[in-house]
Length: 109
Length: 112
Image 1: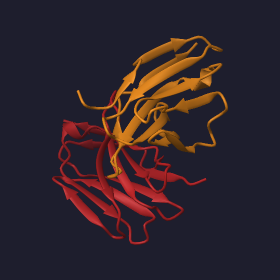
Image 2: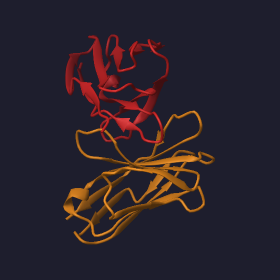
Image 3: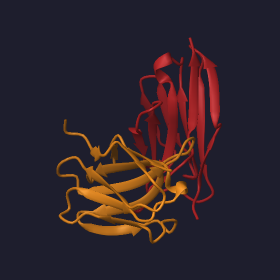
Image 4: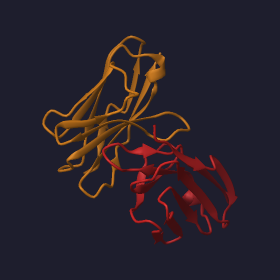
C-alpha cells in the first residue's frame, strides 16, 4: 500500500539553528498537509499544499511541494524552544489520510 | 469549548473485554476520522465518515473494530475482545470541506 516516509526520525538542534524535515512518497501525492504534535498533545494542522512546486511561508516556517508531487519539505529558520515537537506530513487524497512517522525535533536552549 | 472532544480520555481494560469510545466533532463538520497512534509513530488511519456514511475503512482493521456515526454528529468506536496489541492512543478528527483536520485530545487505551 501507499507509504509516506519522513526523514530524519529525530533531529537535535541548538536554539537558533535551522531545521528541515523531508517527506517522500513512491507514488504521486494528492495534497500534502503538515501537522505539529507537541509532547503529550494531539496533532495540530499547520498548512496544506496542493500545487506542484508550491511554496508557502508562515513566519519562520517554509513549506515546499516538489515539482513531481512526490516529496515535500518543512524548513524552520532559527529554531526556538517553542518549536519542540513532532512534525508530520500527511497525504490527504481521497477519503484516506496517510501520515508519515514524523520527525521529532529537540531544541537545546 | 468548540473543539473536538473525546471520552473517556483514558481507559484501562483487561484483555478480552469490550470497550467503546466516543467522539464529538466540531459542530457542523460533516467529515469525521478515527486514527490509532502508538509511541513514535504517526496517526494510523482507521476509518472515515462523511455525515452518517462510513466511506472508508482501513484494511488493517480487524472485525473486532466497528465504528458508527448514527446521526451524522457524534461517533463511537468499539473494540471487541481487546488484545494487548490494541493498546494505543485513539484519535478522532473532524473537518469541513476545507480538508483541515481538527484533532481531539484522544483516548488512551491500555489493555492489561
